Image (cartoon, rainbow, N blue to C red):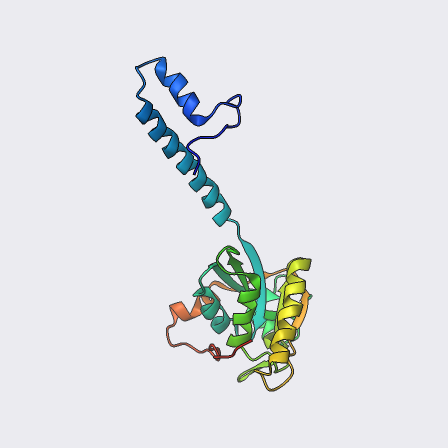
Length: 219
């Protein structure tokens, strides 16, 4: 690592030179001390840039059946910063669970995931998604039947759309699932957070209902 480099607003002077110039005004400067201070400043500056970069997050929105189980498995994934369950993909604004459970509003039970792409890519997140639910059953997941339980990737931007299309094809061609993958790939729509009792449901209710688990599939 460089001991010093020109800084913005220093007129092109290095950190070491600035420290030495300012410190000599008040006390006899020790060369070793100045170099140590410069190194510490440089290291702190670099760590600050790294911290800023690590805080950059992206959003993924996925639906794969009852959102309790989907959220629980994605929540525990390294690189996932936060999760929220809710309703999306329908036409009725601000739906409630009582409304969407009829299947008449067109909404899915979805999970909105905030993730750090420096720790997990959108592609790897989708690979896990295709292992934790059955993407071959239209409007159904396990014992749960209705269009609110359909499999959907709601993409945020063209890059996610391209990635989703690629991963879906890869999963289909792998033969891991014995029937064709029917997961929909559609542009993200308004996401309405579900009622509080649905959030982190399996944390609040250990051993509660879920039909989701990770399959040992390779694709």
